[in-house]
Image 1 (tube, helix red, strand yellow):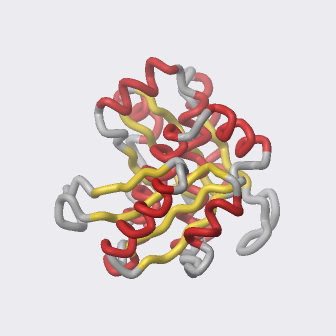
Image 2: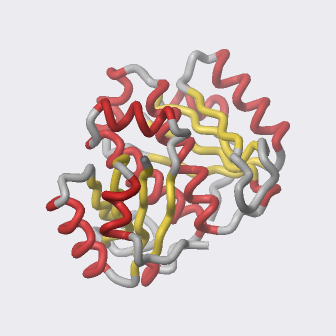
Length: 113
Length: 113
């Protein structure tokens, strides 16, 4: 079980802003998951991986694949109060779900360091 | 309504690591909140603020105050697989709760930029 948050690194968000957007995706995708998936993920320590995408288009393609696979998904648009333009896609949360199901979609992406 | 994540900035965590720890705190504190608080916070767009602390001690003091105030709290210790020593306190999630109740505890802290 894991949860993956894919970040739009084209925005090069500063640390605090990135953390807030990733947290938003994590909570939102979590609430899309069944209670069974939520509990299994909790029992395993809520593993969470932060991965890179290079554009809004890439986030949208990944979202499409994740939805087709029936996984919990949350696509996050920034409210645009501060750093980026309103409505900009900042990140995509997928899961909690089985690591295999998620890796089939995001396994080729690199970690955000 | 808001949720605040206070980060141990003494660790100077890199972006991806920070985001994962903050997301951990956000989900964990969220699950500590009542369904009523969860729903109110959702209805307001899940506002989330990332703030700085300078040490583990400061996180523990804030945690203590938040627990005494009866707020949802999650103190996050890193599993220590990668960047920091196992058991290091990385961040503290408080809320969702009323902005007033949270500000009474964290209102003096600065934003992580």
